[in-house]
Image 1 (cartoon, rainbow, N blue to C red):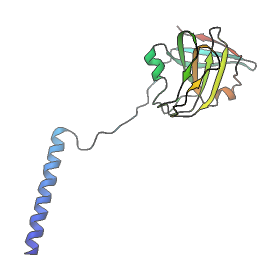
Image 2 (cartoon, rainbow, N blue to C red):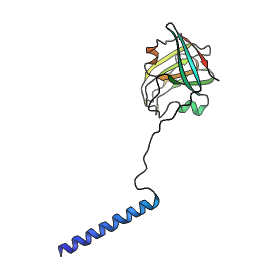
Image 3 (cartoon, rainbow, N blue to C red):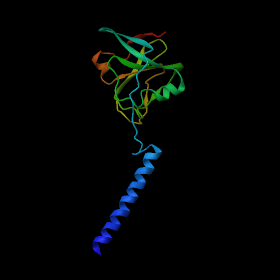
Image 4 (cartoon, rainbow, N blue to C red):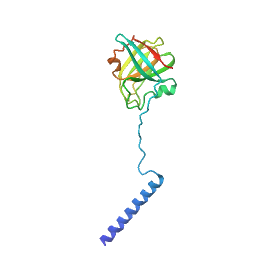
Length: 166
């Protein structure tokens, strides 16, 4: 009798498993959906040239002009090539505030006025932080580069820069 109960239970379990396997294969999903962050291939749209006491240093940049591009920034990126960054262009001077929400890489954030002078730099901004990082004065442009970039190339407030953007 015990063997018969065992085989009935085994048969019921096998039937249920076969049903769920058939149901999932019919819908085309045999496993739960996965969230995958795909690395975007950045579209380089120009170049920023920093003019420092030690000489000039160029960075290839993506350009963020619209409100959507400003809010998206470098979010969800898992890497940024050493010689690349993002240039944010605003229509007018103003107090600027950036955060690192959903930004997975540490950055140096460079605030620049309408005369192309660096107003302030937030160095090594912490990934995923929601802390507001304010410019120390009005700015019209903001440049994001890898953390440590400004120390490596001795870029500091008061330095100037130029853009080469078509």
